[in-house]
Amino acid sequence: STAVTALYDNQSVTTASSGSDPVLRVETDSSAPLRETILETDFENGTTQGWGPRGNVTVKAVSEAAQSGTKSLKVTGRTASWNGPNLNVVGILQPKTVYEISGYVKLAAGQSPSQMIITMQRKPVGGNISYDWIVSSAVNGVTSANWVFLQGQYTFDTAVSSLDIYVESTNNTAAFYLDKFTITKVIPPPTDP
Image (cartoon, rainbow, N blue to C red; front, side, top):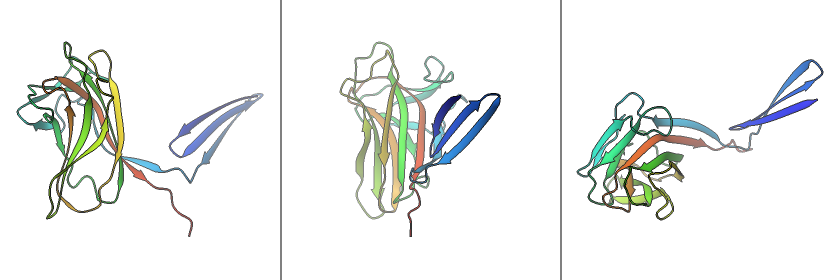
């Protein structure tokens, strides 16, 4: 008898064979959170898919580097750490909801190792702008040699008048790539009454 088990979100799928009759068993773990993809940008259609410049930079879908598929977003012309690609997510993300935010980053050839950060600029209705770090790489953790996966969770409590997510680097002039950027809503498991 041979058994193989695989885990998918909140389900455990086991296949087993006993003689010539395969058996498939699916068990649901109701204590695990569910995940719903809200937004995914992979640049495969050759556009920036809503990403624009933050500062006086150029953002362009290119085929010279890709974490998966054949394209990524390239950012050039940076002159300050906060310069980079920017995506307006007001109306897409909702207060009091947990989101998992992730993406792959890589420096362009010839760039010095750098720290990369995914940041949210948030302005509550009637309030002041704040800058929330969602996730960062290690100091000098991103190079031109390999793609680095960044992933963190984010939530906010009140209604907002603006909400912009962006990718920045501690190296003010580093050119870099972004690929497979995803925002996933984390849905908590139901609670017992």
